[in-house]
Image (cartoon, rainbow, N blue to C red; front, side):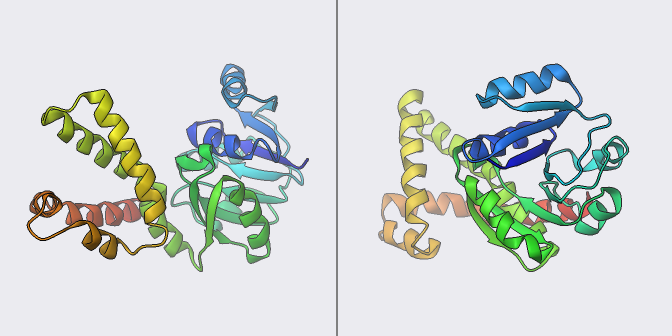
Length: 252
């Protein structure tokens, strides 16, 4: 079984590791022994644990899951030249990673938290010779799409990478709306989860505009609710959310 070495043990690293643990041996590198042990417990399988200081990356397949602002700091603590680094760092360019960390190749990846249930939408770009391997590894946690440029990946970060937070806000708001009208909170949660589960399947094969038109009959309940969303500039806010996230990614 091949080994994947995680440098960083936060939420994203754990989410990805949960998706990979059945197909790969997991090795994790961090600053704090207690947190590494907590990572192992949460993951539910035995992992090789190492402290960051002096860790040797030589010939390893690395999944870099640290904060973008910490790259310079951790580079001073690592030794050896990695075989390849798969980075999940938003806004951190291939050029920056290659100039800071020692590796034969670098691929930028942008998974999302659905990696923990093997449903991530992960975009990829970087050294083309590792395209197939990148899709194989990250394909273990969901769907992958190789993009032609880092600009495109930064834009996709604002959509798929940050998207779970946007959808969480919408799901919570819709549930609150049902509760406001008198539906029990527990029942509203069940209805909302069923809604999102079914919608996730439908949207795979139906264009959003066609799906909307198929639900919205003239003068009906959906048209009334849809009008409220347009009055609240929800469409514009969603467009702005992706724009701001993309802009932030280019500033990191």
